[in-house]
Length: 257
Image (spheres, rainbow, N blue to C red):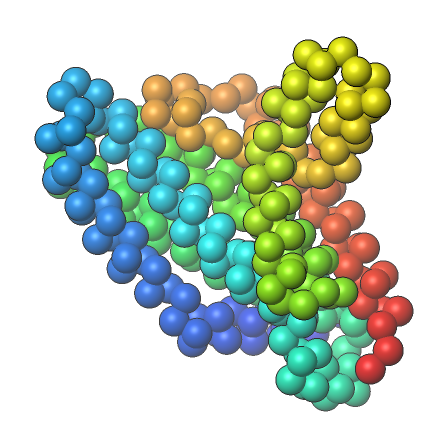
């Protein structure tokens, strides 16, 4: 693979997504946070600060997820439906470079999106004179980005061989189950049914363990995870992401246009 061609694809994807007005979600996020800061103190008398902190991080994750799912699942599928894929594969660019470049471009967009929402979040907290653990929040936001990049790889994989709508629904499903795989394993053990236990363990091994990247609760209480655990989780995300993109490339290379 040629790095220059990959970067060219990534830059084109980045600006294409930006032009789609995806980042208007940042304005909606800012308005949501401003409303939250005003309304929560009236509803919660003693725990309003923790609720506001948790709500802000959850909103960053949800808004990022919406962008990830609907953009990632259409990155390749849209090229196929519009027949522009013929022009792309006719150029001196491999299908592997196309897949990797699109993922890098979307990851860059998600990085900008998460960073912008985090800055707005911290500014609103500061203006509202709400104490917040800066280091923990920054780490939690970084891991939200890691999680979204992994979900983006899932969306691209599903979008390679299915319609955008079906891929979007399946990606949402993978996200929901991926955040609950450990609970499913525990549930399988409680049933004491070997078949169900094996099924739940299989789901845990096959689907991404997205709970590794959920540090929102730690951030709310100002806790910083151990460095070794963070490195392990980042390594897991990178390996799983590379595996998903490799499968996407293998499937895409077998498709006839």
